[in-house]
Length: 362
Length: 109
Image 1 (tube, one colour):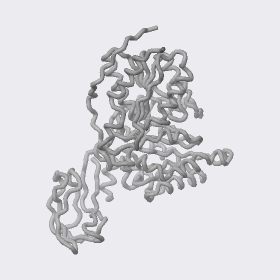
Image 2 (tube, chains in turn blue, green; image 1 turned 180 degrees about the vertical axis):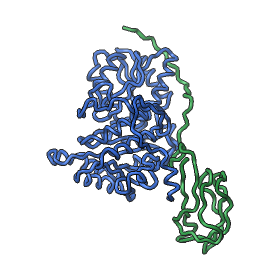
Image 3 (cartoon, chains in turn blue, purple; image 1 turned 135 degrees about the vertical axis):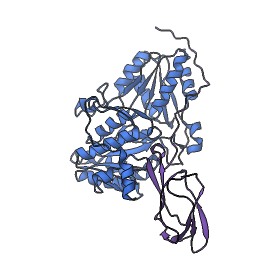
Image 4 (tube, chains in turn cyan, brown; image 1 turned 30 degrees about the horizontal axis):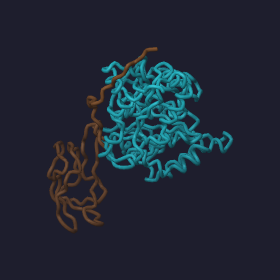
């Protein structure tokens, strides 16, 4: 790529520090790019790498312009070998670096499962805390962009099941910016699942918002309202929809349609999928007494089951109906042409709500 | 605007280069996908290369008579930022459509 190209593409890097009351309309792609830019500037131990992350700036342009600005030693391309990308992250972390590797598409995480599960997740445990793995693995996740097979998956349950990993998925540009900066400062490995179908929609990013570390170094997502826990995306009183990533926007649409029928739906954006903010679930469903959990991943052993159990644990006595799950089907995540048949659509979610509404005991 | 560079592909089986005969587009021009953009000659044949995508032509590489190696830049397209993803399609924000209506008797106890 020529110099001209580099200059042209570095338009969305930001150098100016956030001023007071600094709220900007950014896409999630821009917000993530800015977060990475700031993390690189703030922590000299941060390195960013992956397939096409360097010169090209990433296939989704999340690392756009960062190599030109921060140098080829800190933002660089790797061979097409995910096991190598994540294996190198282990070594870098052991040597004191804070790697932010990217797996170009979620389906390409499979070749690196050994490094993620057997090394990254366990090294701190194995070394009695002497070799923490401050790795933030960025994974463009979920479907919705009509991509070929392996370019759309929903792997949260797989990652969440592995002790030692934290899993988070933002649904808005604001959360993407703050959660990525937060994840990058953790001593534990974080799987950062970016909803790729939401990269381009703009939303307000409040750069003056209190850092999620209002809870300082508290890793547990119990601090209601901060970025370390779940977020009430819409308040309601009849039913709680629980979602994360790209499904949050869809659930908000459904909530508007339900309102037309007189049903007041609360939407809880879980954000953290490991650990899950059980208190937020209890608080919301304790109020609404009905719950539907929505995810793109297949039904069986999906994270919806975990959410349903957590709700049942805290709200069993007052629940009006069993927790309903509206999910993908128990088939491989399909390629683009079949996406609309697979991803929970508005009518399927409305049916799920209806099943909960009409449930009667006995 | 973002730029997408298209390198010269292998136009046969194991060819390593091609010679530019004539450019059929010029910088600034809007092209459609599959529109012929350049005439090339290889050791096997002469051919017209179709555009791999729609977009505005940013730069072209090689004057008539120049030889370009496979993998080197041939043409650079300028595309709007929001369509600059390389795999997949930017989803459109559409007004939600529904067929299912909700009905419930809510006892507010």
